[in-house]
Length: 303
Image (cartoon, rainbow, N blue to C red; front, side):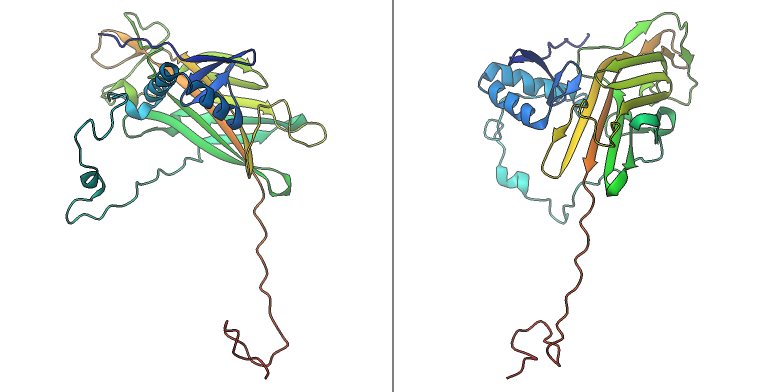
C-alpha cells in the first residue's frame, strides 16, 4: 500500500504565495527571513485547520520520523501517563545529554573565483553516512572572509520522505547501476545523479554522478555583501538558504533483485555569516598600593 500524498500547506500574504516545507516557509524555492517566517506562523495559527496541516507536514518532512505515527492533539493527560514518571530517571541510571554528532568538514570544499563568486563542491560519496533512521550527506565548510568574518556553509542531501514524492520502481536498469551484496538496503547506496544544472534566484546548483556544486556571488565589486542574496538578518549573525525537492537519482538494482529503484532526494544549502570574535579584554592592574588586595576591597589599602 502506498503512502498517501499530502498537499503541502500554502499561504497567501501580501500578494505572494508561500509554501510550508521542513518547518519553515519558502517563496519560489528560497527560504524566507526568520522575521517573515514568524509573521506567517502567527497568521497561520489563526486558522486551526491550516496550522494543524502545517504541524503534520513538518512531522512528515523530518527524516527522523520515518516509520513513526503522529498523534495530533494528544496530550499526556489523554494518554493517561504520569508526568512525574516521565521526568523521573530509572533507578540506578544517571541521565546524560544526547550525544552530538561530529561535523563533517572533509567533504565540502570552497573556492573564490573572480568578481566575488564563491563555489562550493561537495563529495557525496565520501560524506555518505548513517544517522538514527536514515543515510544522508551533510557536510560543512567555514569560509574565511576579510576582517575576521566567517561564512559557515552546510550542504545536505537526504532522501525525501515527505510523501509528496515516492520511490520509482522500474523493470529495466537502463542508465542505472547494479550494486553488489555488500549493501543490504538501498538506503546504504550512495546516490548518483544525471547531469543537472539549475538556477534558483541568485544561487546556481548542479548535480552530476556523486558530486554537488553550489555557486553564488557573495561579494560585489566594492567587496561588500551581495544584497541580491535572500539575507535574513538576526541579532549577531545573518543567513540565507536554498531548498529543492523531488530530485531523483539514477536507478539502482540491488544484488538478487529483479527490479530497480530510484529514490527522490532533497538538496539544501544553508549559509550563516558570523561576526568576528570579540577581542579578549586585557587585565587591568593597580600600581598605587604596595600590597595586592587579593580581590578583597578592605586589604592592602593605606589607612
